[in-house]
Amino acid sequence: MKDPRDIIVAPVVSEKSYELMETGVYTFKVHPSASKPEIRDAVEAIWGVEVLKVNTLNRKGKATRVRGTNRTGSKPNTKRAIVTLAAGEIPLFEN
Image (cartoon, rainbow, N blue to C red):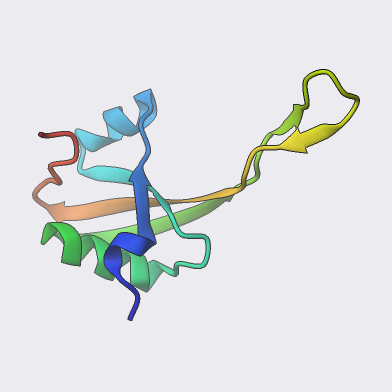
């Protein structure tokens, strides 16, 4: 079993994710090889809440230009998990 803190990398901070938090839906960046059952178990283990549903998506990194040269690069690919809770909430941004 992987450590739950290795599966959940970071919360996604955006206007859309903040709006979804009010309805009990949280968005996280997760490890690229993490499966839906692993993500569910990790969220339940870290915060002690009941997960209703997990959706995942793979986002391709944007193409970028390297300054001063004629080469192109890219930002890293990421995997995100959209987690719906049955009840309760996750205290993400508290001290």
